[in-house]
Each structure stands twice: as structure tokens, then as C-alpha cells.
Amino acid sequence: MGTSPVYRNATVYELLMRGLYGRHYRSRYRAIADLIPDGAEVMDVCCGPATLYTRYLRGRTGSYTGLDLNDRFIARLEDAGGHGTVWDVDADVPLPAADHVVMQASLYQFLPEPVPVLERMLAAARERVIVSEPIRNLASSNNRVVAAAARRYTDAGAGARDHRFTEQTLEELFSRYESRILRRSLIAGGREKLFVLAA
Image (cartoon, rainbow, N blue to C red; front, side, top):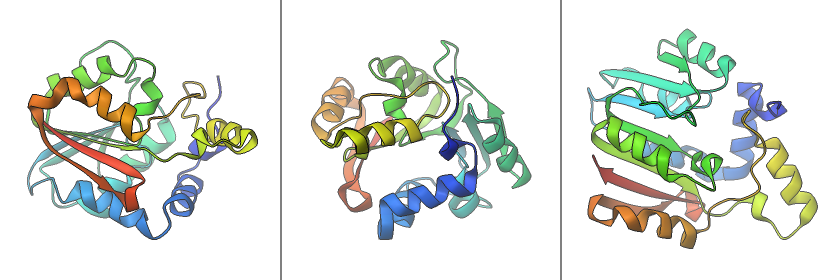
């Protein structure tokens, strides 16, 4: 099972994200960075090229650990001064502990059963779990060609995913954690929905 070209190169990945999010590209990271206090320990699950760290958290956090299947992304993070570990988040093993556990635009990779990874994130967090997930996706397009291409080029290495969240299905998932939800809001021009949960 191969990683798509998008996930083989951090520059290509970021160019695609900039194209998808346009003027909201920076704000999607800023919305998460603003929730993390100075000096906090952060674990970024499925960190990708670790843009959250390199552009927004470096020098602010007590520590930052990025987890990702892509060894190239992890090497880039290490070169930038962060700590990274090649990690299969889908494996049924506990995640490393941190004050704030973050996942951005990756929860769809665990469909149709995202609950186990959310439970491991909650178990690892000392203070907060922060999840932001796209609710408007090209992979869910009614245009079959566009949808197929989007699924193929967003394969992070675990196989292309046929499904994505809508706002309704994401709300249904998080309804089981209602008593823990401290905040929910739309970010990135309404393309993503953000949830902040108490540990």
C-alpha cells in the first residue's frame, strides 16, 4: 500500500493545503495554536510536516512531539528542532502522555471506527484534547473524478479512505463526549470544525 505523492514531499503537501484553504490556510493553524498556553507539552497526532510546530509553536511550548507514519515528515520535524516519532496511530497501543493532544484534519483516516483513537487521545491528555476536522471535502464531491482523485492523493500511507465527515456526522461522533466538550466552533472559513475536550 503506497503513500500518495502528496504525502511524500512536505513542500507538495503544503502547496496543496494552501490551494485547498486559500486565504484561510494560516487561520486553521492559528485557531489551534491560540488554544495552547506557553510552556505546555504538546503531542500532535498525525502531525504531517509539523507546520503547527514550525510556524506557530516553536519556542512557545515546553515540549512538542509529533507522531506520523511518514518517516520523511518526522525527519523534517527533527531537523527543525522538534521531537518526532514514526508511529502507527491505528495500532492499539497507548499514546505518549502530554498536556495537550492535538489532531488536525486526520480523524477521517480512522473511519469507520474513529472512537478507539479518540479514546487513546483522551487517555494520553493531561489537560485537553483538540481535534479539528474538515467538514467540506473534495473527496466527498458529487463529481466522481474529483472525489476519486482527492481520495487517492490524500492517502497518508494506510490506504485511500472512501468517506469523510460532514458537520452532522462529526457532531454525532462527538455527542458521546458532550460532557467533556469545552468548545466547538467552525474555523478556516467553515471548512473545518474544531472541538476542545477536557481530559
